[in-house]
Image 1: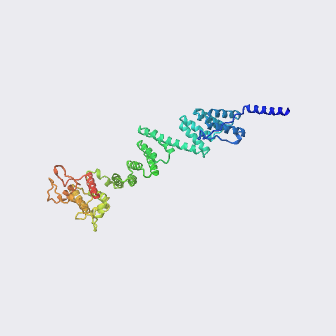
Image 2: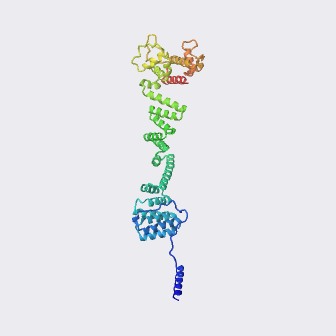
Image 3: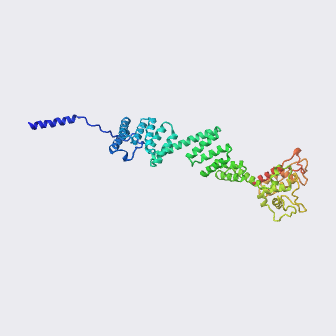
Length: 451
């Protein structure tokens, strides 16, 4: 009997145990986490007891299972027991992010950061929350602070790069709009912000330089255009801008150098012509005042004509130089002496029978025609096909008969397109020429010589 009673008691106890309510186990997320981008808010073990840490990890697992409400309750319960456990406050921020309550998330992350200002998980989470409410600039600052606290956060670094790129793109777009609207100060500010975000982008410096050039700040424009070329030596628009700035400033040598650099990248006849023009202007600036005054002069001296021919036809005259030096007694010390000797040795302008050149003598149309005719002979020697157009000239002049000694020179000058008849189909051999006429005739000769 006692044995039966004991057996019955055991059975009853076992049955009662089977019917009793078991304690609920913390759910463990099955499969992949729902929020893999969330940064687990870890911390120093001394922040809480091992029991609290275990409960906290279980709550994070609940959050990653997708049950944000249950996770909220567990994180809040942990904070009630351990108010200074700021990782749980950050975890509440992530729970708010999970349920898309970005404003509440910011509040929780701010509380965690009040306890530990350099807490990377809270800074990163705060960045995500700020981004969700449209505060991209503040989000970028928070992400950068998170990276500063923990440089190993690769996902945060990617966020920073993307935001910087987006910010730069927005700054560029706004800068271009401001520039188009003529708001140069605003455009400049936005371009500088874009450059700060992307300092290796050559086109940003170039576009900023264009804005500064238009606003009259050529010094800054030149600096930024040069920076653009430093980053991208093949930036033709920046090279052109540099050349144009120097040209506008009458710095002919630097303009020629800039056009030369441009031509090396993108050759063109237009740029080559610019190089020649800049070199000529640079050379012109070093010329004596008598030479610089030629084109504005109402009359031209023999010295001035010799200088024009000597400068603009230098290569042709050097190749045609005679072996015997011309003897002239009145050119020593004259400002145009080197060019007088050059044209005399090439036979383009001759000394008088008394061995004088008379550099101050006036040049008349007949004198210019004689010099032009001799230059045409030199050009024809090198370019016989080109010379066909003036080899047998037969223009008619009302005041110069074909048997006149000066007719051949006048006729060749007109036939070659270097000089033109005057009113009434006259040539007017004795009429003084102006500086502009002399310069134009020599420029036409130079063009023929280059063909």
